[in-house]
Image 1: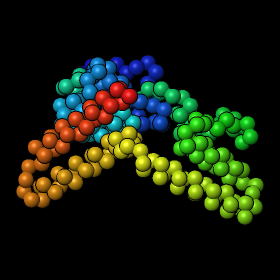
Image 2 (image 1 turned 180 degrees about the vertical axis):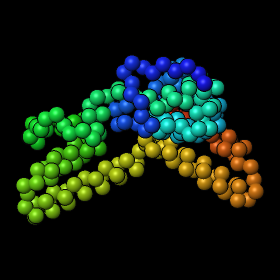
Image 3 (image 1 turned 120 degrees about the horizontal axis):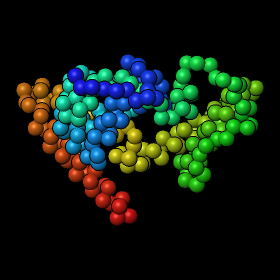
Image 4 (image 1 turned 180 degrees about the horizontal axis):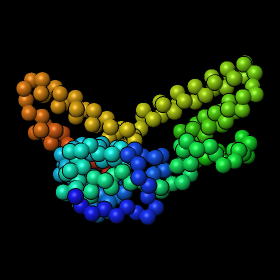
Length: 219
């Protein structure tokens, strides 16, 4: 077992304490990769790139990958159970502890959002509707009216998001993982080895991603 000295500001937990925390294991991996692409690391580990996204978001790798990470990047498995708080505001928001003080009145809370793009304005509008509905001092007819407007705005947001490029969507890595799993299952059903097909598929996706980045840089 590799020596591991927990960071001074870290806490031990078998699961991510809250959204504002990142594992010491992920910090070690991110430092070790030194610019190395996630797809390249995923190939070396024999996993899908979506797995790395899940580890970054707080999911602890399974034992098989912990062993590979220990050998490949000198990351002890225990490092993934020490959590460093990077964003105290998110950690406080998801904590089970009661808030230190009462929240400010709804009129004094700033609603974050970027005004300009249609989808951003719609999101700010939904946030304002949520704020009004949270007051709890509305008549049933008024609530129904606001809920109708809220649903219309959410529907418009969904349509705009559908028009966005799939590879820009935050759930894109998870979609790729599900597609690959379905491909593996289908090939195994017909008695075929899915490893070659998976490699071809990942190489194709990597080319698509490189072309997409090149277009963005050119723009």
